[in-house]
Length: 202
Image 1 (tube, helix red, strand yellow):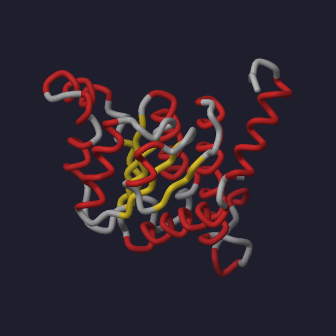
Image 2 (tube, rainbow, N blue to C red):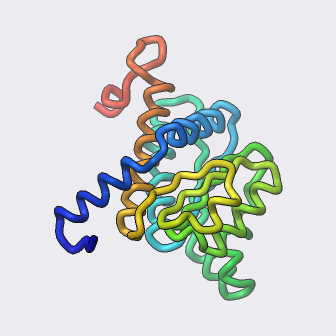
Image 3 (cartoon, rainbow, N blue to C red):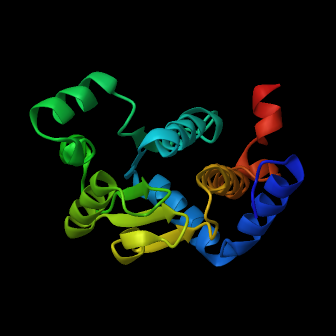
């Protein structure tokens, strides 16, 4: 099916969202909450649109999910520092643009989320493999057939659709789902758990 009409795109997006394993989304939310509780970092990264998704998600957890909390989410997007990415790409190699900054931050027990629509981005795979071998919990977010990413992550979020734009939409939606779950679990509506998000920003 071609996706050049709003109707076809909407159908593909709904089908792709329905393909997401809800238990995997809940497991990702649990991983975020565990990292928050343990004071661990959450590192995320990707290329192109996936990099934009990683940056957006980090911003959401630095502000939206953390606002008003005494203990905050420690989320870092590794593709946000453009000078360092360009220096690493130029001096070392593009395949190391996420691996090298990760070495500055990663500690055992951290949560590492690599995003690759194809599942085959060499720089994402290289960083995830390093993270996994150094005691981090690894998450791979992919689309299409899943690629090699499905084999090198502890938890996989797979948008089962052969379209990059729809894949990117689904990945952002998953981060938003996780954010909502975390905010509900940490804040909820019980007064003993603090104000709801709407009350915090009003």
